[in-house]
Length: 255
Image (cartoon, rainbow, N blue to C red; front, side):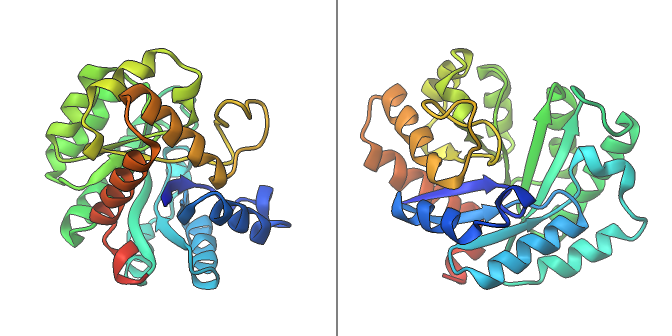
């Protein structure tokens, strides 16, 4: 059984067929889906899905794209969300220096504030990192948070190793099926420090490039990890699922 540790199934892309999407995931051996919040309204939508569907869990956070629009008391609202038994992490938080939809100074402030909140609450974080490796690492190190994941990992082996030293994990998307540079990262880092995700509706793996992604396709990410590691799919599924349960402890306590 697999866990899609990062999917945006609360987006309107799926609203008219959400049950079909969840069922397709279950039919492909995906036992749990973590629906990722990017701002306060989407975090609430993720929670509603988690309350309705047993296999769905949620996160809450302010994405770097949304950092400039974060309301003043957003941390209090996130803290309230976190009390819910199916809210498994703070996220998606982080930095995005590729699009710069929010001012970088504001991005960093909101990122650091959420890391500090996660640390104070002893709660894991789901981190977005795009062309911002050094500042992402510095934020984690300064916060002292030692539980979390760099989702949709897209950097090099050296950065991966630095991230692992903080206690954080690394999660791979369908990008590993079409970006050769990421193959070395998969090969080099320990299996027990990685998870798999789709980042639906984005980043469809081969053979679904160009089509809308969905959680059932996490199977193809796991298959690619197995191929690169030269191990069985079952071993990848067992390890990544165990890692997800250990990091996101509410996945187990409410199942």
